[in-house]
Amino acid sequence: MSPWLNIAEHAGTVPNVHSHRGETRCQLPRSDAWLSIDRRHAELLACSRTPFGIPKAKVILSLRDSPDAWWKSFENTLGRMQTLSFLLTTLPLPSIRLLIRTGYTFGQHRLDKLYGGPLDPDGYNRHNDWVRSVVPREELLEFNVKEGWEPLCKFLDVPVPHIPFPHTNDTAAVSMHLKKARALGLVSWAAIFGCAGATWYWYRIGGFFG
Image 1 (cartoon, rainbow, N blue to C red):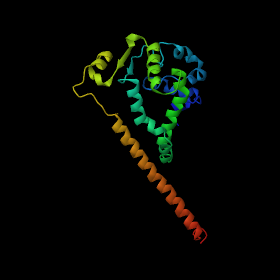
Image 2: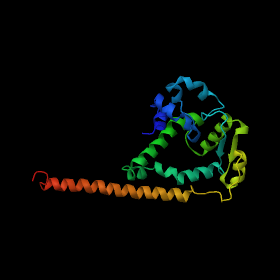
Image 3: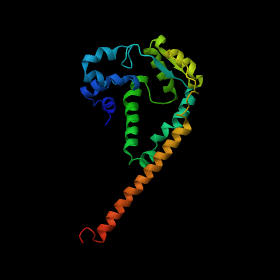
Image 4: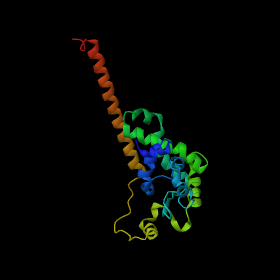
């Protein structure tokens, strides 16, 4: 079980926080559970200038063309994971179950509290407004991937790479991964029912008792 998931579900331990607080630069915003887990870090975590647990961190706010464009993209990708058919089809796959549980946990425990409402097109603006309210302007880049390397590299003070800007996590790519997960789930269900059927048949013909 992921220690980050335990923390988000308010089931984390002090070792969870001690061993993972150095990785907050690549994680979602801090969990309120941290404050109850270890009061020694309350001052750092409560500081409005350190919403991600790192003082003076550079924060990149990813923008879309509009809230409706973001919502359409979400519904066509991650939103499909919330459908009953996907949940039932992929139920035998531990990695997918963990992914769905993680998304549900952060959605239930974090988004409503952070942004004052559920995940919807308006939530896009609430999220952006929240980030702008807690990150100093000089440490924040509002970035649309259509802008390419230059604003990103300038903000991070690194050279511009001589390779095209990557576009790999698009709707088509995510849809392909979801289809593969469904297919693997169906194969797993077939194996489960196949083994159950063979066991029942073997039992019926007296195979277990000679």
